[in-house]
Image 1: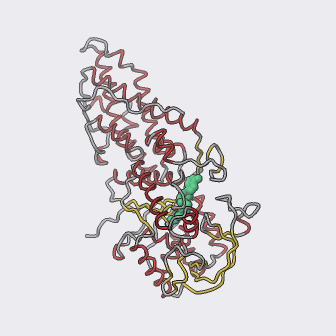
Image 2 (image 1 turned 135 degrees about the vertical axis):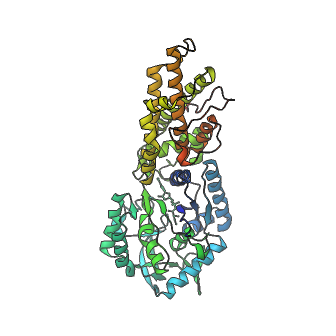
Image 3 (image 1 turned 180 degrees about the vertical axis):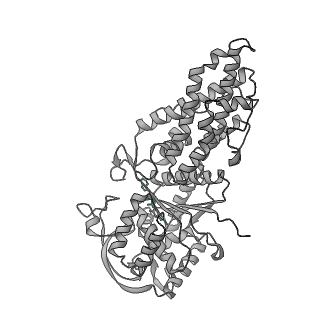
Length: 502
Ligand code: MSP
């Protein structure tokens, strides 16, 4: 029997030149929500994240801090590990490029590509952005020769290096793109890649003489391997050569699309390894409409947001407010308003009202007929499948939008029926029964909503599941309108989410 292929998802390996940035947290939160959703579906999931530790940029930062590069890397890596723990990132592998196993893998890969005849020595002259660890052409730069992503000056670069014969893969890549039209997502980002392919790809240097902090080129210890040629292999280095998994999805930001959509597949083709199924380039986050940058002094640190507003607020805001794939903005005012409106008002109040009513009054179980006749039935019966369809398209904000539309429908039912008034009538009266049915219907709906929200907000999810006496979500097939659940008998009230203050 053939083993089922796991859903293998990666985040980029983050540079450890500085403390984790909001952009890194954003990619990782999204990857975690996708991974958790696949686990909810019953898939075997491998979520890999990690750090990219070599190269001139990190070498230079360690030097200014008067630390040896490894000490510097260990310290920053620890901040990433702490952040991922605090954000409940459920990764299965944490890949470090300073790991000895990684070094072996990179050198073996280099030799394989070399044996294929895809590596040669030549001179290179050009402009280099140390922050991107990438070459730039004049036309990509802003006035004053500034990198358009980092707004920092580029450097003149001239060295004799080893080159990777990327140009050789222009045609094979064109064929690959034709045969795999969904390889780059969102679709609008594909044009940029196709334009580069149409121009024809150029070979690029994959070794450095001037950088000591890197993996030595086999048989040429005076040169180190270019940090991107090294880091991309971090997606495979935790695995043995026999079970190199094929990536289902590389989740990245739009700025590093070219490396993942062109360089990486070409490298894999050269080494005769399987190509990833999809690369998704999400948008950039701005701060109050402006590009975030150290020079502007408007960088947001994820730990600050986390300590001030909590994990649920943070995960919810970025997953819900930014249509996945588009650019998004962070402004404290909008953040606070959105989070309070959805988590405290819509969701939190709904839970607390229903739990209060359930624990105060004796309510009859719904009959099959009442379940079938409920005005919530139609939307809640189809909700799991609709949310799944959105997630398959990586429309994370769309999925959350559907779940909150169901929450709104439940709030509306309560506002219209006012069970808190009906339940004050005599226990066997028609009014009392109508009140009882209304509360039970909503409770039934909350069960579905609670499960579906778990991948997005695992911490809040735990509190919601506890209402039903559960410690983890039920298997996918049971997240249905037809299942009946009882309230955890110890529960009398629940403050699901406390309002946040700006
Ligand atoms: N080390 C490389 C990736 C190597 S993968 C084999 C790298 N690291 S990074 O730390 O600079 O960037 C990591 C991710 O953060 C990228 O996906 C990038 O797009 C993302 N972001 C950086 N700034 C961002 C925003 N302002 N907004 C959203 N994400 C952005 O590149």
